[in-house]
Length: 68
Image (cartoon, rainbow, N blue to C red; front, side, top):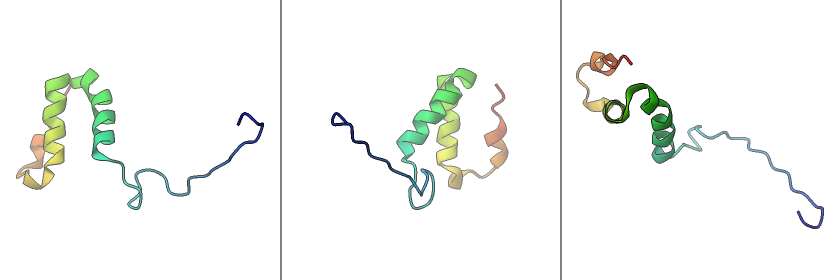
């Protein structure tokens, strides 16, 4: 601080734990940062949409049809 004092803190529950979930928007942002350079925007969006709707997936093998 300007007066020379300082504050310390500690996070005992890391982000991503059930009691401190990561917001979907943050997960999507990280996913696209990593996936778009590999698969491109359209393909990355398709994969993300399938992952967000796993409960509707009748055949999980379609999730693995995305080789770069």
